[in-house]
Figure 1: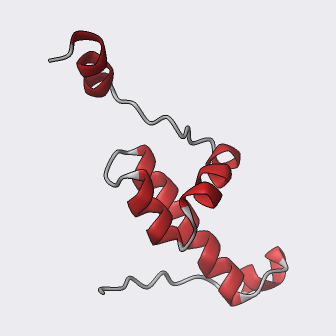
Figure 2 (figure 1 turned 45 degrees about the horizontal axis):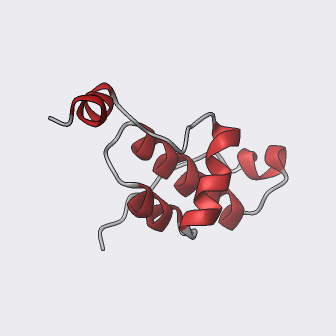
Figure 3 (figure 1 turned 90 degrees about the horizontal axis):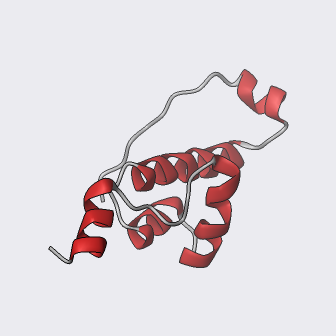
Length: 83
């Protein structure tokens, strides 16, 4: 699987009080949540990218300001009009 590397200042570890593993886990969550919010990946794909179960990922979306119900205009129009 391809990987991406996100450089960050080591001071982030000190100021956040978190370990490198915790910071990297949070980066994965935030990236997955944003991709889900933009409609680029499904809920399941985002959860997998974040390294969490679907249920855990869904609970972690609200504090990030991302709705679990990720309907775009086209999705809503399709639901209403069936087209």
